[in-house]
Amino acid sequence: MRARYLVIALVSAILLAIFVSMNGSAPDTLAQAPTSLSIDVIPTDNTATSVVKIDTCASAQNGDVFDIDIVIENVTDLLAWELYLSYDPAVLEVQDHDAAMFQDANQESEVIDLSEDTPDDDGRYLIQSFDSADPSSPDSGSGVLARITLKAQGEGISPVSITEVDLNDDGTPDQGPLLRDVAGEIIGDEDGDTLFDGQTNGAEIRIGELCADPDAKAAVQNRDDSSGVSAGVVVGAGLAAVVALMIGLVVVLRRRRATSS
Ligand SMILES: [Ca+2]
Ligand SMILES: [Ca+2]
Ligand SMILES: [Ca+2]
Ligand SMILES: [Ca+2]
Image (cartoon, rainbow, N blue to C red; front, side, top):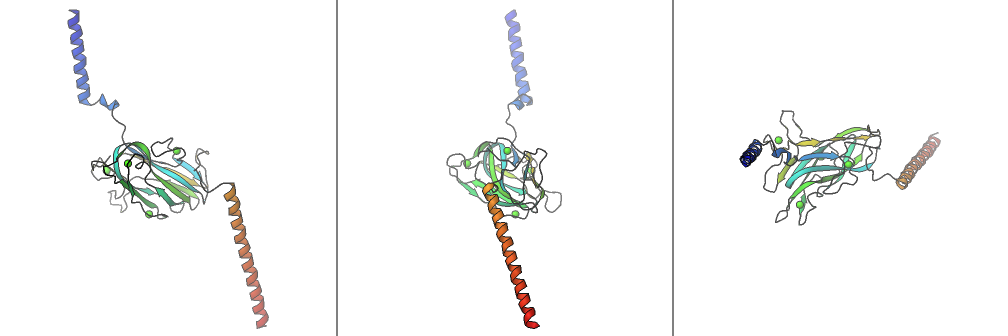
């Protein structure tokens, strides 16, 4: 009798498990996290296939040169992608880029970089590449899709963003992130316009002012003790040239005055 109850309990448990799995509520916890894109404005210690901490604000000074990372997380079989970095050209310009980090990390990759030329100073920078390896060498997981070198061009706060943009204000986005997998399928497009609809996290860069966290500073490449001295020398030399020019002008004017009188 007791064994019979046990069998009934077991069968009920199995049926319940099947029911739950058919409704989709149980496997949700097992499902892979959705693909997301973010900008990490302090890329210190990130590698091509690992991201340490995504920072959303960094401060720097005018003239500073520093990197930011475009980070992808939880992608499966990525083969080709494109996205636009929006920035304020009064504050920043794009000096350089590396679009092959994440895609180049696995063996036999042959990444072709089709990004816009640098320097770029019109506020929209197109970065795109695909892995042309045969047999194909798609990439899965998380890492640094692209590393962008920026230069501070003026004081102020520049948002940096990779979300889709409606350029002609007709209510339909014209440009945005596009991710394609090894089967040619578009990744993360819910509404059929090919543009990525998953999480895209932007950030901001403050030139000449601190972030809410005063320690959130850009990883500046050009500013150290030696470059500070050489900048001072350059300014000094410039001033000397201006003074020499003015003395020359005064001499010429005096001579003219002398000859005309
Ligand atoms: Ca970081
Ligand atoms: Ca690859
Ligand atoms: Ca551009
Ligand atoms: Ca879409």
